[in-house]
Amino acid sequence: MNSTLSFGEYLVFLKDSIRNLSEYWQKIGHNHPHIKDINVGLHHADPFILYRASIAASLLLEDQLIYH
Image (tube, rainbow, N blue to C red):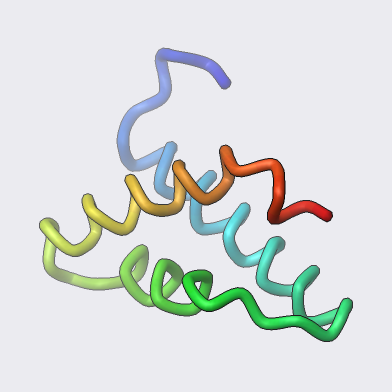
């Protein structure tokens, strides 16, 4: 990941990544308990909720267990 991205660009990356991950989990017939909440938070108008959702999304994407 390029360290010169703005927070807005990083949010676009997170939103796309969480959307793709959500579609993947739906295709394999499973439901991850946090993906829906994180996705809602990433699209929330409240900046505090948006910020916390971005942290949760980053931590979720870092977890190797979600890809198996």
